[in-house]
Image (cartoon, rainbow, N blue to C red; front, top):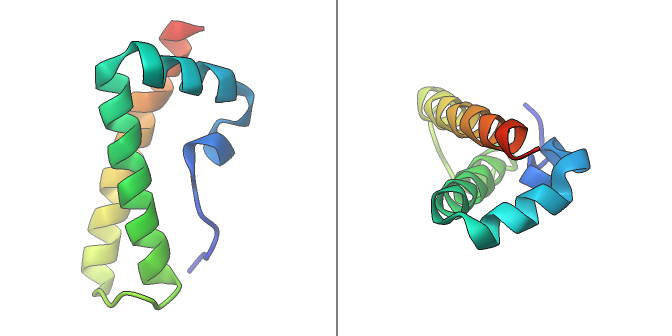
Length: 80
């Protein structure tokens, strides 16, 4: 288990400006980013034993986060 948060700015450090810009200019991107950050905080709370969850539930959340991250990465590539 990792206790490292995976915020968008940590995941895409070279795209910090693009992330900020897209959050302002693109409502769809802003929703994806907010959903990602919310999901990421929940995963971090579970991994830090602050919130209870089964291993299966945690894995499901991680898969959702990865899917969102892939979609966000594709949008960042398109914006570049």
